[in-house]
Image 1 (cartoon, rainbow, N blue to C red):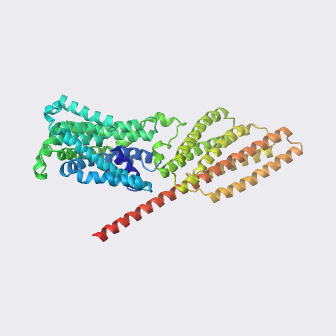
Image 2: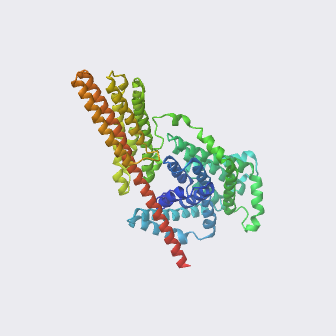
Image 3: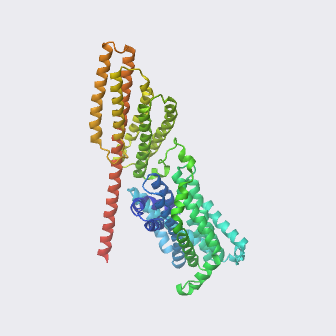
Length: 541
């Protein structure tokens, strides 16, 4: 399962990105996308982790993420169908051994990373079904010696025991797909009754939540919310399936003849797995809005800790475009804090030194987190255009760090005793500085690099005028020399502070544009490849 999942995640990584980012506009499309991509990579945990990354990068809302979680739980039932259809109705050796050979040939000889990953997935596919064959042959003839087969009723103790065993299998192997493969093989070999197998499948479904819970230890609030949605879906679905187990099994038994299925077969168990997960989607569907609202109210403590990054999540590092988007959003968040602090310094009638020092610690921690995240991102394999833009993130961090230092130096500007004309000029200068910093807000629709450049030129000209008037006032004896020096240095720091904020915004706009272009290019490439495949299929037909 590990070889198959990891290989498919790399080779289908672009499909994962495109499906999750462009096919989740409605809740139904989100469910279908989650089911499709989970069927491809054979791992609901992989899709859950990817979804967490998309949410933290700001590309998916919680509503879209929850819909994908629903779909991923339906998609993971594909493993049961693979085992029951291929593992029990085909001669496994006729395709498993060639698949392993061809897969390892591609893995060793493939120069392209995606081709090598596809080979790894193909080899994993072959090994997976060789394991199924080994289990099937191993179980054959030993069913009379396995005490688990003795439980044939629907007693509460029996059900809870089998449910616990199924959950334990998944927790130990960290793969519900592998656990379900063993359960279905045991059922098909006669070691487990169909009822016992059904209870174990429910347990495996619940046990798979352990992966999500482990993945979000120390993660961001959004990551915890997505993981909790995964847990709630599986637990609620498991409870409902357990309560309705006799009814569901009788209903499936009724359709057994219509579907021409063998009594107690692995295929019946695969059908049960699919049915109760679809039932879970149907039950939770009308409550999704309330669920998302309730999740939004949880995990507030970490979110309220302003020194903790909101968008930087290690799960995005595997997808550079997402990681760059998350990095840009975190820098924009830091910029908002710095800009608000700078505006407060210029607008306050008194010193705010204590607040400055307190918030400086918060911003320093965020800047350090950005640097560490950029370092980890740089250690991976980055596309050339993103590798060129990544150093800009550290440059933006440096600008914001400088701004805090300048803000501390500027603090208390209003407390200086100045001649009336100089005080009036200083007030106008402060107002112009605030206007310039507001124009450097990337989150505003009217942001323009050209407009910022124009405002910076006007602001610099105004700074020179205030400086000239102050020096003239000093030479005429209207201001003490020490006061002239202090005031000129203060307004210089105001000019530096505002200019750094503008430069940071301009560099950030370049980073965002590079990320957007990369996303668009990938989507165009994916669309083109899809059309090519469609044309090839039509020509073949």
